[in-house]
Image (cartoon, rainbow, N blue to C red):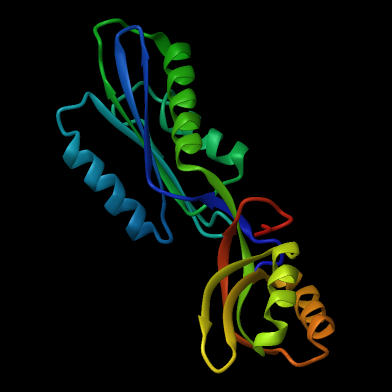
Length: 217
């Protein structure tokens, strides 16, 4: 796993921008592979096959190993490349942006097109939301009932996500934490329970976090 993770999009989203009667539909989605990006692009091309242009830009790979963009008939360098520059500026990867244009009869000129596609791409990213995909770990924590309130309070103070809680012979909680915060989590639980909490790491993964500091419950 990359030490600091990477930035990507949270969800598939669409925004809209109108300038000089041209309508721009701005689509963005997270994509883990180039095949997913091409499928997303294909779906938009099919859905908006009556549009004047369906320009796109996508970046795949945590180190931006795959970079593709297209003007789709717009003057060279006025659509796909400006969109890619927005992706680079935001430092997002594993995502695809498609900007669908319905021409309104008024020419925008090269500069106007660059501004329109750049702004449309930015709107799409804002709509989809950007998060840091950080190396993370999921733990199953088992705690005796008399210690649960103390543990629950501690978890609320730590940069973790409480995912599930089950009340069986003991209280069992599934929590997610960034790998960088795992040691602090385990140390705090050991201290709060006098080493009576059982912590089993059940998964290592990348997970989205809204800030570099993680999230508090």
